[in-house]
Length: 148
Image (cartoon, rainbow, N blue to C red; front, side, top):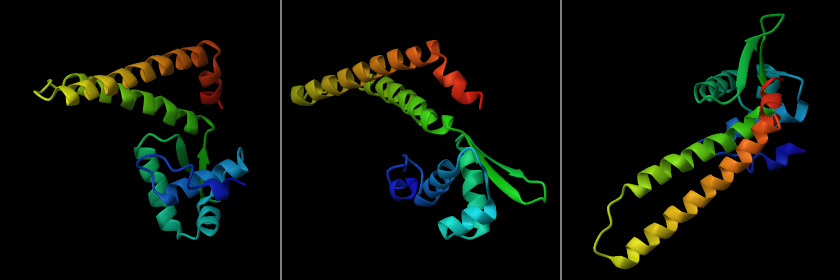
């Protein structure tokens, strides 16, 4: 089911192969997949899958590669992973707003007005996201996902 939506699962900075890996893992969740199974399902070689999973781990994507009972590596993810992107996106929006408000006004009033509009949009977006995230934490939704 999710395979046809792998492109829509693509996140900023994530390539098609990484999205395919996550899509395959979500399809069989909570079951884990071996590197060999992922390679077969994605049409990539095993080394490429290992490299992609390691790269995702380095980018703090909630995914893990472990050795199985017969020393065959398997990959596990968490349903917290898609939510982690929402939290990261909110953090990135805050950083962008911080940078944006530090830009000095210039002589072009039309441009200055547009900069104020962009800053307002970012500010309101962040405020709404803060309210949502606070609600999710108060209902312990995020903690429950992390405790898988």
